[in-house]
Length: 183
Ligand SMILES: [Zn+2]
Image (cartoon, rainbow, N blue to C red):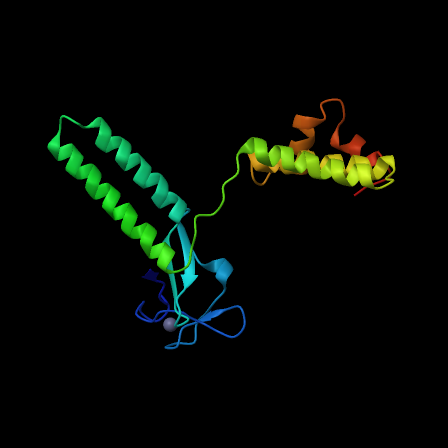
């Protein structure tokens, strides 16, 4: 794994896990909240057996990279140079994958849009069918389902945007007035 070091005191000291949920720099005492660890979307932070903080490439990304490298290899049959480049690309991805696995990190399960959509709707049905809910509660659950799907498509979707795309017949003010929900 690649160490994550404290930038406040020169970038040489690797953060170490503390007994609460923070990381600490032993040189300057700087504290780091896990939520403030900045990584790109292809990286995952982790802690080694010594308690030191670092990051590895997401193994799911490495697997996809290996798969692409093999395709590239098969498509470059008339180019020894191209095949060597593909093998090298595969080797680098494999090393990153093994690095992540040695830290105990497995590829995260991925879900398709349809799977998430179905699960959210099914979850709402389970609750609706199992409880004797009134219309206000059912309406609220349906709003939450629509909001969840809207946020799946576009994270950070506002209430107004969600209403606009799902409830063309009603304005946000009308929906706020449905059950005296207000606000
Ligand atoms: Zn420091």
